[in-house]
Picture 1 (tube, rainbow, N blue to C red):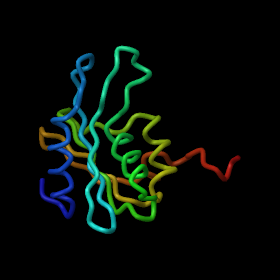
Picture 2: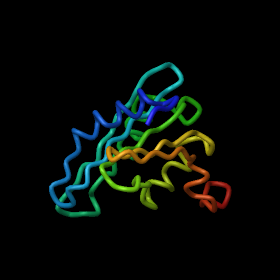
Picture 3: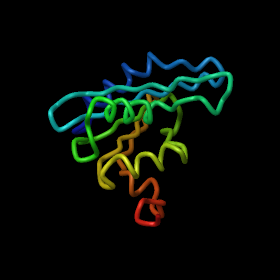
Length: 134
């Protein structure tokens, strides 16, 4: 698996090692690249009260926003797992991505088992609920 975003995927795999997943044992890593060349990482963090769990991609995106970045600053997002085929974001994450990324920002999904797919927030959630409906 070699791509334009290989270093971003590698950073996501490194972040995956930080996952805390004692209940599902499903480790997700994420890495977000900003226009100024900064990489923001995230990993899933589980909780015994499952609803309080934070997915890796939301962790990375929220961290970027907390550092002052906004959607126009984000170049790409990589999300990695050990699943076969690649794991795609859950519904909650798709909703966050459609609002906090530009709709055509590349989202790279990769697996340690060799799976790889490039998509976008819009492709992940084609009939998104956005502020335009409010």
